[in-house]
Structures are given as structure tokens and as C-alpha cells.
Length: 58
Picture (tube, one colour):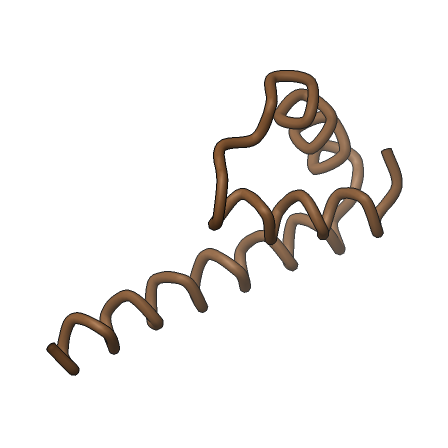
């Protein structure tokens, strides 16, 4: 799995449940790639902030 595939799946994971083989591919890639680990962290932070904003908006 390359970085493009991994970042797409990291983004998709916030919208749907990843398949088992997708999860394994992402986890394996994240072990090896510091750039994608950083992307995943940034996505998690953004997702958390968006949920917090939506909660405060309601």
C-alpha cells in the first residue's frame, strides 16, 4: 500500500467502517511511514474539532 492509498483510507475511515484487509494495510503502512502517521493524527484532530464545533452549534 502506498501513501496515496493510505491517506484515502484514513479519510474514508471517518465515513465508513474499513474492511479487514484495508485496516491491516493501513496499520502496516503507518508502522513504516512517518508522513502518513502525521496525516492520520491531523485527520483525527480535525475530526474531533468538527464534532466539537457541531455539538456547540446545536
